[in-house]
Image (cartoon, rainbow, N blue to C red; front, side, top):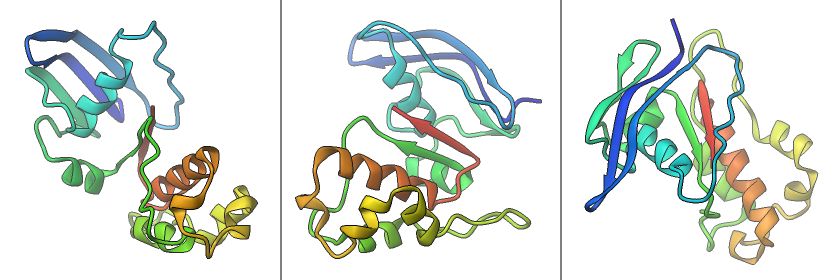
Length: 160
């Protein structure tokens, strides 16, 4: 059984039919990359998985549990993390406060990511820990968004 599975996924933006029956099976401990030209539906596929775009047909399942049509926060709680293309930080909070916002308990028996580990992987963020996130460069904001997503201890991490 696949950890993440899309079956016959369709999605629209208004009258524009963007996804046409997408099928995808992702086994556990696998890295998958979606390739295609601008406008080919890569971001829409990720947003449909996350519930940010409601699929008009098809299903999204995680470990056999149907997530189709659920709200994004519920999908996140089920174990899917998302790093959007846009740099979404809390601009008036410090780097450290932004990271704390992402901390979630890991499932039983699974080691949880820690803020200290994030600082080990991204030492620049540790240097900037007391700076408001709105003052970070674009690259630093993207690092912060990735770290915050990892601190949610997702089973699947989607990066746009």
